[in-house]
Amino acid sequence: MAAEAEAQGETLSYEGLRAFEGLAAATAGEGRDPVNAPMIRHWCEAMGDTNPAYEGPDAIAPPTMLQVWTMAGLSGYAGRTGAYDDLLALLDGAGYTSVVATDCEQEYVRPLRPGDSITFDAVIESVSPLKKTKLGEGHFVTTRMDVRAGGELAGTHRFRILKYAPRRRGADPPAPRAPERSRSARPRPVVNRDNAGFWDGVAAHRLLIQRCGDCGTLRFPWLPGCNACGGQEWDTVQASGEGTVFSYVVMHHPPFPAFDPPYAVGLIELAEGVRIVSNVTGVPPEKVRIGMPVRLEFLRVDEEYELPVFRAEGERV
Ligand code: ZN
Image (cartoon, rainbow, N blue to C red):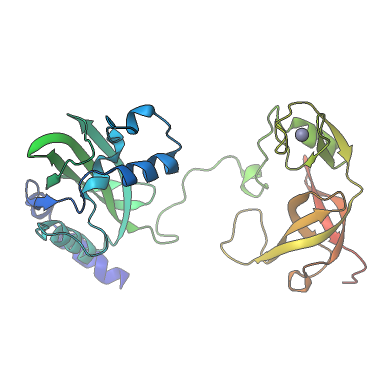
């Protein structure tokens, strides 16, 4: 299959791809609904955008909604030419079967208002030469859509995808890596001023929970403010180390460097009531159960790194 795709890939000429440049992807497309207040309201609520320009009798639509008014829904729209589908099919046939949207650019010419009827044309603007990316080799395809209201240009929407052949495992030499020591090292936590106290505690074999200075609510993981009252003041309490497995997964795949599957990742509910994600140790992963009592211990992962983990209580392995 892969070999077949590769063989076809060699026959795919860039000239053949460039022949699609300038072809219409959609002509005289029509928006399913005129620009309207309910869709604007849903958008603003989803985005958390409270700009007063988007409500009231003189409302305009948020400019970034430009593409929304052209969207076809599941039933598609009239005016689609098939050229875009033909181009994608050609790339698929040559082994560039994966797709990722990479970016979009918009240009606003005039505001859209409730009641505006939308028409649009789309053109395949460019197909890039073969590019090497971290995802794999492929071609970028850029489509330009001109959006009109009452026949007048309102804005332009450029949309770019990468059609690529996914890299086969082991097909390419791995990317250059950091020195040998870090190859098998567990990933390091990001320590910043908001959580440094937690890691200081770990270094001293103490599992520290934050406690709000205003309302006393415990919180974990560490955060700058209280979820309950917003208070900024806090101190810490040391966890007793008692807990139970609130939930868990057993990791089999994918394998990550420095991890040795299968292993159990548990969401541990501490006796104090907060929860922490950690490993469950001292028992084969398939024996981990919800509600299982566990006890804190500190696992030396390598010469400079320790982690709080939870050992199944009363289990003999
Ligand atoms: Zn609080």
